[in-house]
Image (cartoon, rainbow, N blue to C red; front, side, top):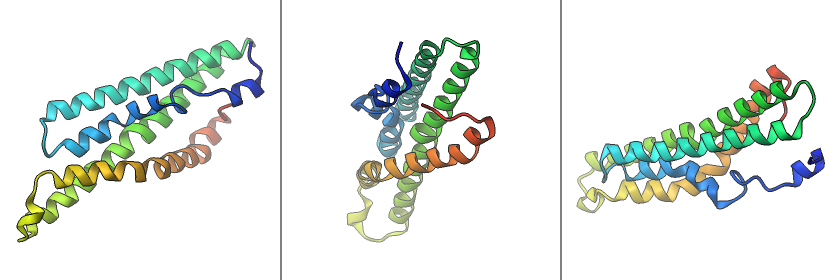
Length: 160
C-alpha cells in the first residue's frame, strides 16, 4: 500500500514519460492532413484516444488500490473521470483543433498568395509539426486550471 506522499512522488507513466507523446499522435496526423489520406488522420486519433483510455484505466486502478475505505468506488470513479476529461481536452481535442486551424490558416494564405515558393504542399505540415512543442505546455496548463475552477471545484475532487 502506497502512502499519499509516495503517490505524489511517483512517476506517472502516462504523463511523465515519453509515452505521453502518444497522446499527441492526432496533432501529428493533423499536421500531415494536407499530404495524407483522411483515414490515416483518423487512425492518429485512434492512437491518441487509446492513450487517453489507457491512462484513464491506469488512473482508476491506481486510485482503487490506494483507497481501501468504503468511498473507494467513488474516489476511483472521480479519478477516472478527471483523467478522461483532462486527457481528452489536453491531449486530443484542443491540440488537435489548434494544429488543424494552424494548418488551415497556412493553406488559406497559400491559396491567396501569388508567391510560387509558398505553394509547396509540405509547408502547412512543416509549420504544424513545428508548432506542436509550443502548444503542449500552455494547453496543459489552461486545461489544468480550467478543471481546477470548474469540474474539480464543483465535485470537491482534487487529484493526488
